[in-house]
Image 1: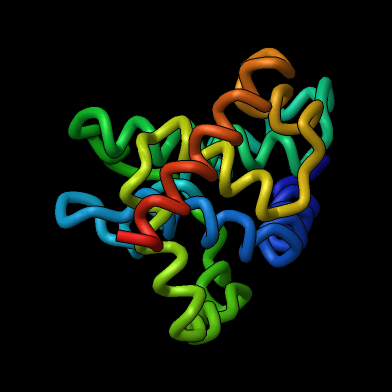
Image 2: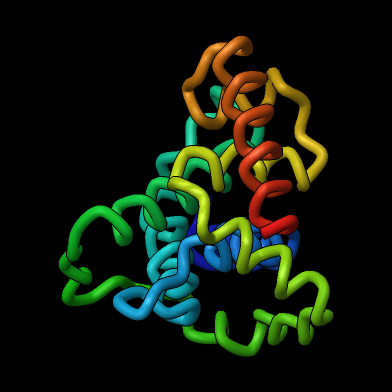
Length: 163
């Protein structure tokens, strides 16, 4: 695949999954890692890994994994930004600005952000209507672990709402 075709394929992939990347990043924002930084870092990592994608899993699973790992790395420790990543020149034009979230969604995401990193991930994937098997594939957990983590996260969220 030539450089031009690779860039076009990447832009198409980002357009298709930009809301997914955005939603994962929203759950991991912090004062140290604002949403824009996490989103940009995720897109950079997706671009860096895109030519090496071996299609051993679905593209959506790969996008989730890369974005999730980028966010978890940002949460766990300070990461060095690459000095230069040859990003597509017209990528900024290709990405739409995420729409304003409704107040209820903001409150829900605020509660989800109070969960631990793994619980946040499982809840986010569940809200994206992934099956337990898909969540297990993305996170590397067993099906039983996915069910347990999800149940515990739901209990915690209910307690937070009632408090």
